[in-house]
Length: 267
Image (cartoon, rainbow, N blue to C red; front, top):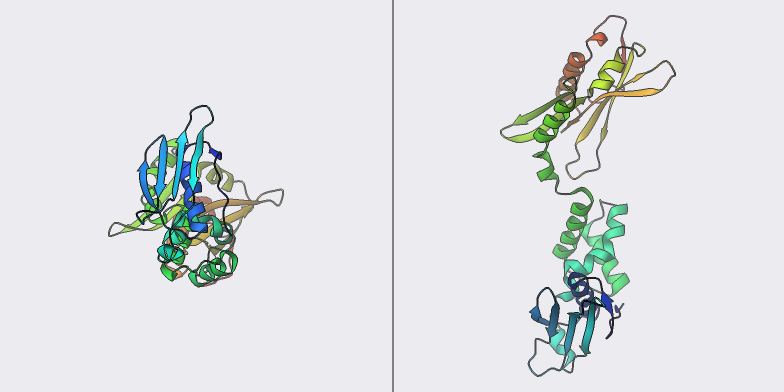
């Protein structure tokens, strides 16, 4: 499906104009080279010398960035047989962003199939994989980098209230787990019914970590989250780690008449 572009089209900035031009070229499966590109203008020519093709966008200040020249290719279509413009991420991401957001587990082969059926564009498996990962990074950010932010986050969390409790487990410089029990919930725990439910659930992120949660019930029968932890796997070792911190942060739970309930799944 060809993306329209014509002389007089305007864009808010030079980056938007470049993206529109590149999408136009990719949708037509035509190759090009950038002859000039700066903050005020961009000029595209054909890779083949002698071809009349030319696209020029210029920042007119008053009207924004405007397409001032658009001359089609005069060369043979065979010139563009190996064009990679239709494989560019900037062209592929808008096609598959909604699909990946709806189903982050979609496979690269499914993306390849969708691109072929919907846009008549055959792309390599590796490029389909890159498109999926780029969209996932847009959704969640780079998770590997996020783990490195936990120490700073915990420092701010505890600085906000000395009674906020957090613990982080690191082995050989690699993040393993984190536990959180906010001060307000620690105080509320003293006034809840002597009943605590604990459970774990999978997160839908890249590393499929487990979220362990402890909840209580107040006098109005409302569920009150008390503490939670992010751990690599749900097993006896990590449940013990979580419950030790839970007992430390809620000492009133360590009584004979306090009831705990769980489904005993892998714990």
